[in-house]
Image (cartoon, rainbow, N blue to C red):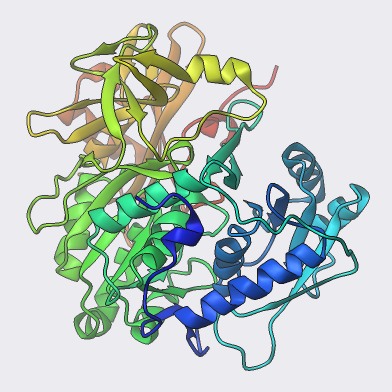
Length: 509
């Protein structure tokens, strides 16, 4: 097992292209290695080296991919969402204790303002005219002598924050060994080889894109074609140009792609995929079946989270072994079920826990969260994922929802994923997210936000009547909202927690 990113990305011949992008020459593996040497020299001369934290605020694309890969072999990377506002950068840059900020050469936006106010070094990234995809140069007014010692296995390679939906975001440090282990787990699960090419549409400030698309591909000596972000209108044009063997996305992206697949059947036929991958949220069984039928390729659903450096479970790749509604079998770390309140392992349904080389050593500066989320059992250290689920007789994991998202209707516990699955069987429903609606007597009731298929005319009453035919009365949504689009987070995931407030369904005190 490789223990650092440097080791992970060494030993492959440079014949296969590594990084591509729209209308750009490919950056070969040799070019990527040369860029790494240049970045190390540049950062060291700017006073940045091993152990220093470098925030990266760059648009999605090949430069963001190579900046992460190369800087992580010199210092600690902290990618941040380019869409943040200045006050958000004030918080994140301070919380990270970042020493420097990397931005595009002409960027004078809110991240630069926040970093300047904090007295941080500003490092500007430039792309020479005609340069290969991902190639860049760095410049800064700051000079110094950074520690040039290569990072070790127990050095932090990547820092990300949890989403902070219900509380202050927690800092998740991922070691070089965590990142390397997860990349190897994904490479093995997907049987990636130098012949593979990933079309990346995932944001590269998020663990899914950074590890599953970029790092795992490079670990296999394969290539990545980096889109500037997700755009359903452009996806098939990118597919035609990139000629990928696979892509990875969140369920809402897959659904948007399916909506345009019919008019792009020729591109699908001319560019057959070896497989499709879905992660970061549960993929509705109906969507998995439609994707498989549309692309004629296995749809591999995986289960991941930031604290695990992404992948924890994955459906097998062999044709016919994917189970709709299941997030797969353990694919890297060991996985068990734990009691939801007591620190012990149990059989049946409970909280999913993991232990393995890809798991973060713990939240930074947060002993309370560590005490709550980690425990010792059977001679191992286990991390609580916050997800409720159970393994079936064949070892596939089925999730019933986030423990914080389970709806408690007067003592009746309702899985929003179960309600989603029923409502998606309605012929007029394209997307659905079930969520808790505060109730004065029951505590919580069931609500659902719905996006209808194009041209559909179903009403709230129709959908509630359909639900009543297929599930117990207490699970039927008391409130159904039909929308043009469901609010999503920065990574494209639909967010259940707080949705009632976002939709104006909760009276303000």
